[in-house]
Amino acid sequence: MNNKTIKLMTLLAVLSTMAVSCQKDNIDSAMPANVVNNVHSVYIYQYEVNGVRSRITLRSEYDRIFFINRMFALAEKGYQVSFFDETRTAQLFSKETVVYSTKDKNKALAWSRNMVDNGYEVIITYNEETGYYDCTAIK
Amino acid sequence: MKHPKYLLPVLGLLIVAATLWCIRHPRTLPENQCSPVYQHYAQVPGIQASFVKDFPLNDTLSIDVTFLQATTDSAWTLLSQDFGVKPLNNKIIERHGKNAVSNRLAPKKDYSLPMDTTCRTNNDLLLISRAEQIICIFHVSSSWQIKEIEDWQFNAMINRTPLKTIENEQ
Image 1 (spheres, each protein chain N blue to C red):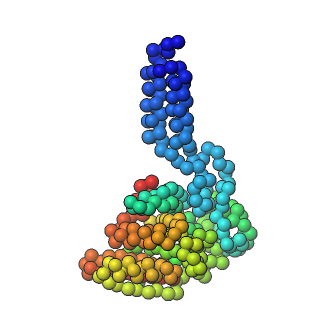
Image 2: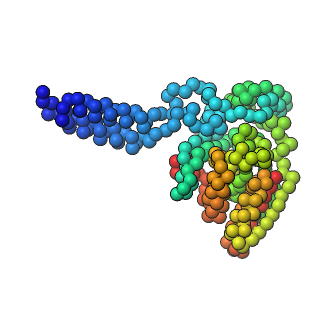
Image 3: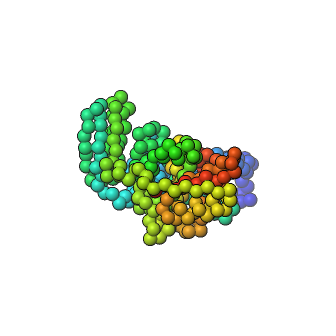
């Protein structure tokens, strides 16, 4: 084996090490290049700090993250903090619930797929005592 | 010219060391190759974010998964708002137990919105565990993938496989 071959093999070994052990956070900046493109570009938050209630309009995703980080920082210091996005709170409570039960696994699966395809959130559990697949879909 | 006697053993050691290094430090992705939702939540305090590239769902399908777990109640409130997670009423909890896992399709552009009905693949599939404060996002690109995940998730639900096994299998 000549010198050239040995040098080449050494170089290949080093390169292969570098190629498969690239670390996650060695070159990227603090703020990600791709931020989730959120449809809601304006947020209105209600927040309460030690019983004092306020309201704030946040006009970008960066403002929202900054605000949330500030709230967490206050909580860590011992302040009593709560906050919510008032533009979305109205959507939080379910208005429609559909239930279904069957002993047939395939029917339960088909029902689940159908409900998910129609925009429902589906929960299925198997009741070992009764042998039924209990299914609930909520919207 | 003859090479020194020690060169081959040193080279062999180097190759063995490199191999061991690769085994102990499996490849991790640069952050810009992870999903946008992972990048978004990786910096939010109280949220443990993971991204699994090509999670092996079964013999024929591997899929990208983002795994978010809230470690505080405030962080869970935030995730619930961002992903449109509704509280379960007592009747549902009675029927399914507090550890129930649910699934739904949500638009890729904004997970808090109802499913985008114009095109199924405009959505990702979310798995939600309120008890464990976990949201799993399966980044789908075809109807077939949605079907396979639903089958897999149905069996996981029936067998009550904890969502944390997804993170452990990366």
